[in-house]
Length: 236
Image 1 (spheres, rainbow, N blue to C red):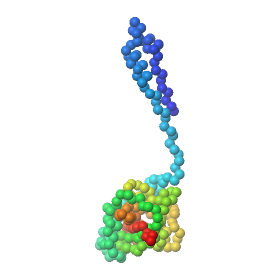
Image 2 (cartoon, helix red, strand yellow):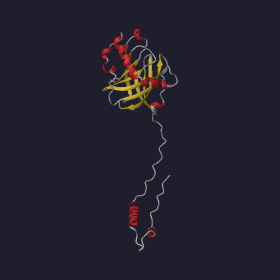
Image 3 (cartoon, rainbow, N blue to C red):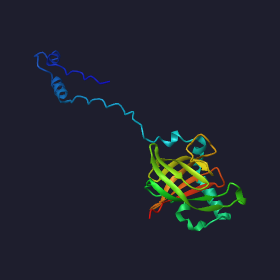
Image 4 (cartoon, rainbow, N blue to C red):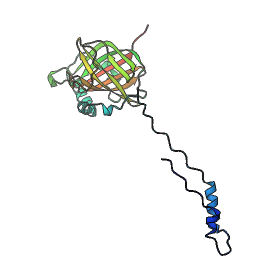
């Protein structure tokens, strides 16, 4: 509600408090001068806009309790998975991965451009303990990052395990992906929060000039930490 400014005191009112000779008191003159120089109050601000179309909501209002726990324990997933990967036998060349398996490799400028990417999955650690493979380095597949009305979306297009989901901005080094996993010949998953066996949470980080990774702590299958490396697809 707009505030009503009280009126300035008049000369007649000030004169009623004057001394015996009817002169205005010094305090009255000062009050008149201050009143004349005081600007009117500014108009009230407009009401906040209710337009929210196309704005991506905060991931904290979407994430399930299970995935929140995975996300909060991602450092523990890194520690266990790397210990197992370095101690147990594996498949592929672990030493060639460089910054991909460095937990502290994230750089500023995380937001990836839209387009087609080459991607490969690296599984670290074993849910089977000492009897399982400590790591598996897979070959390259096709992935895509596209702009949708709800925000950036990542999709792994080929392979037997195909995660997809929305990328939520968090800070300059970190985006959060909430998505689902499609297996075998299933259509692309698009049902986060409906099937806990397929839900996943991941952190997107930039680890090179044109190189990103998705970090999936405590995945449903096989490993204790999954990494998906992303590099732009060649267009020549």
